[in-house]
Image 1 (cartoon, rainbow, N blue to C red):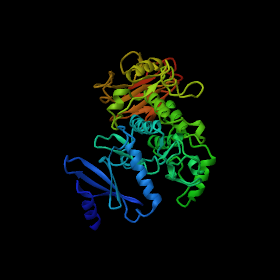
Image 2: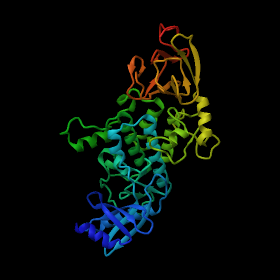
Image 3: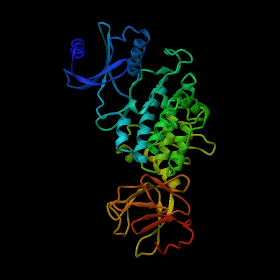
Image 4: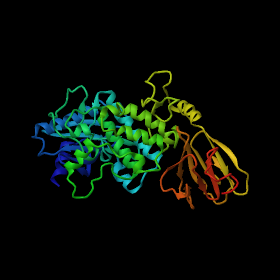
Length: 442
């Protein structure tokens, strides 16, 4: 392997173990720094690409961009090395694989999907605040570390919002087609809203389990698919996945709006709205302890727990009296979101329960313990929503959670005149029970 011998000769401060992956212009090696034993990823520009001035400039620009960024949800740069014309970008090693591979075998819950979305928003927020737009956000460019913390990687197509480092000629198509915003397809300049679109597409796929723009057949013309994306409104999340939370669906659909002016302005605005919608399924602690932990904070306007104001805005401006962050915000939002449930357990009279926060229910080891031996411990999670409905998620129960008579295989929503069956227990919205049900029978 002459390649690895050349890399070892060029980077004597590192032990080189082997190839992690490779692409059109580069090879990524696994390595370890000799003096402190820190594991690293070494991205090398292929020797046959070093003579291409534009490719080399993009590689060097990626190193400069990474050097200007420092966020828990962006891969950390260790150093940029040039040895006898060979270029190397050395970063932290992310050993958890990429997001696309992970979710293909382990479909995420709504809370996990929101956690990934918030992690992406946090990293991109940091970049946008420093005038950098990524332009190629996709599941393969979201890597996980050993603790499953999601981090944005590959800033090779990144550009300055001020236009100082743009190497792209007008009309040039850059990015990954499945996640490209309409303005990218048209060859127009990318903005922070371009990255917002890509995050929205990823969230749509995580939640619905399907592609936003799946071609009609394998032989479909890719160009026709791109033209369709420019000319047609995207499929609403609630159509692709009828059980979607209204608040979450509103955020995801706005992020994927065909016109950039109708999306969230940047990742900060998207993150705040997504955080507000995620309150239906978990609080700050749940997000920190999620399968994909969030290492950032977001704000939400207490009277706007769904993330969208009456006028369609995304909430109060940063620093305004209505804008808060963290746990305190969750308390205020939960108060506004409180929903009263009517619960009928077997052999007991009906009772009411005020649902103020995401709550687990079951026969034991749950926030709300029910007198029903048929329930698991815990059985399901319920969460209040800004529109008065209740988000429902089965927690791997042995006999299932049934919403309006249908067993849930993904999170769903309990609305007016609907009913929820857990074992022999029935739960409805107080004052909005199904027609013909008086609360005395299950």
